[in-house]
Length: 123
Image 1: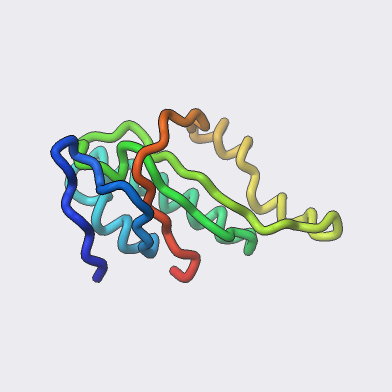
Image 2: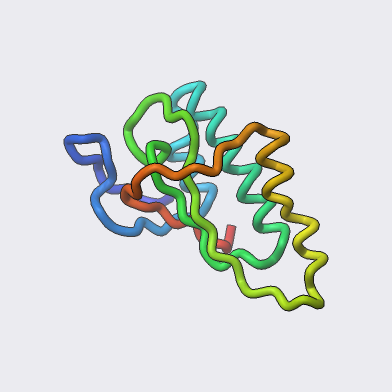
């Protein structure tokens, strides 16, 4: 099990990149309150959908979800995807971000960057 650093006096992780599996992120940040459980469920759904493309190179989680805030409204993510040639365009059908955003009323807006947690693709 991953050992997470303590939050600072503002409730943030120390500056830096904290690598973890998605399971470690969900266990550490997604269980303490009902709101965190709801947001963690959204994160897990997005992660699985992105992973299903086979093109995820990096999946970075940041914002209030990876802080001590008891009730984050959302989870901020940044994904770096592998390049897909035109002949592999069918993979795009498996990850229809715009459709999922409309369907779930998800916001794609980002606030300022905070210390990031990177979920490894190995989980």
